[in-house]
Image (tube, rainbow, N blue to C red; front, top):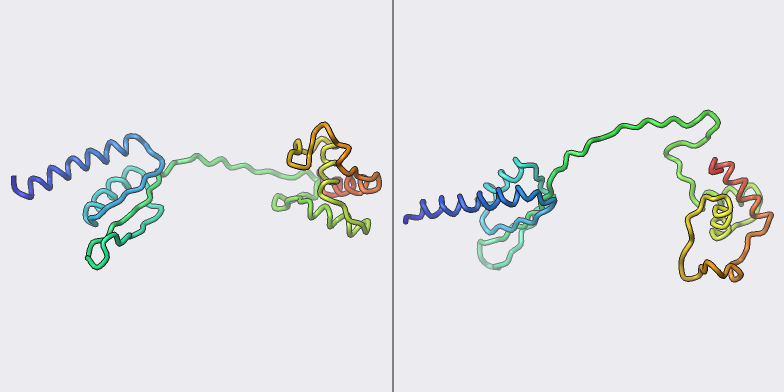
Length: 170
């Protein structure tokens, strides 16, 4: 067999291989090539079938030679449907969609209005009392032993509830 027939035969087998890989529908793949012409040929097929190139990196595995390996990260482009949602806050609300209420904002509000500081623990306790908090876990939290946990004073609880009302949390 001459070189042209061998190259055509190899190219046909590689095309069949790439077609099988594409048919598996893998979300991501890494393509490593030592020959730029075969990389270009195969990328043309992969791109036409919905893959996009995320990253290309050349790796010099054989220094002082003209050979370089090319690594390509590909991802299958998914056509995800987009749903447009429009939300209008009610007239009484002073909440804006860009605004996110944080413990720091609550603490700053209380410090400015009442002149004292409150801890994140106290804010979490009052959130729990109002039915807003998630169940707390961690090294210092024991469900059945609340006696070791400092309790929020009534004055600070009132200030935290006021902050919740100010930010339309309750």
